[in-house]
Image 1 (cartoon, rainbow, N blue to C red):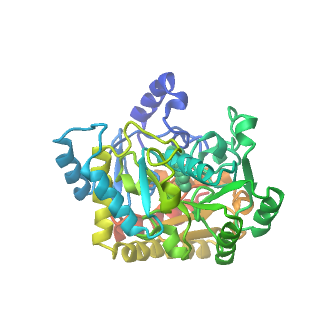
Image 2: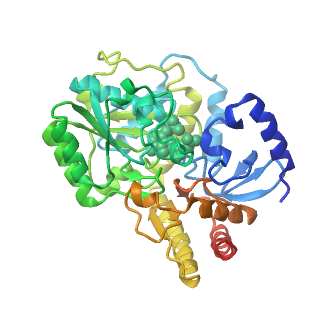
Length: 428
Ligand code: KE4
């Protein structure tokens, strides 16, 4: 596979951009080798600058529920750009977008648009602190909520694979109010709540984790967490940046049947453009400036182009609810193929899947929290990643991520992936 142009670009990029990338997980650090520079995407595929074609299961780390460049998003952008790119003033599309999100996610009575998942989660924590007057919050080891200082404590995703789960530059003062619990372990929550009585503003959780690989909350755990938050008047925040509109039109909260007090969104709601959002109970959201004193702002929040792309994506979901049946069928087919390969090869690697988010862990133990996920052999994952890449299958360049199936993936793509999976594992 010729990758000279990517290599040249990467050498050039490293002179001007830290690590040659604008987000660490793209650098292939945890799988080895140099990143490929992508030229173009179409449907389930994209092509690198050397012309190599890949079936893409990253989908820009989640946004591309319909694959690359779906016509309904491109058409919406073309129409919007004729009117201008940004005004810094309210537009009707922002009202339509807010109505669409609150219509699709019942727990969200009001919503504020921002420009990334990180902005959404940091703003949600501030809203919870402003509403409760409390300062501490609980996150779970292995969950990733973006790169705001106080989240980078035992964080997942890139922070995990790059070995900096607790990042330098995060001050003790900033970390002091971050309490750490164990995913799916209600005793760890009870302990923190009793030792920090009336001091905890919020619990933030990935209701279906995608940043320690894919790990779903246990039903009894999430039900008890909801009850404890009610009892202790703690704001329960579902970080649905990855799961929102991914696992169901109503997100993980629809799948789990649990209503959070606040939710955060990103990825899919931007249709591939930079968009995040946070929203939830009216009595909390009305504390946000300018209706309330909790300050939150953004020059390009609700940007007309991002709203056009995001609205087109969510409108497509609203008008085509059967896409989740299609995503389930395609993802289950892929999972079945992978499992048949593992059986044939006598390997019992853990496979976790929720809807069109899936992860195969290089450990034969059950993976239901950060500690068990972390037992995965990341060196072996790196080899597997490159074997699949050689065969034209582009997976997450890190073990602790998710593989995303889109509506654009065809049976041919899936069969090619299943075959490549078997041949790759054989060659490890
Ligand atoms: P962004 O700031 O990257 O838009 O969103 C942060 C974020 C918040 N919450 C969850 C559950 C997330 O998954 C993310 C971002 N996800 C990672 C992939 N695991 C983004 C990829 C990257 O960092 O480049």
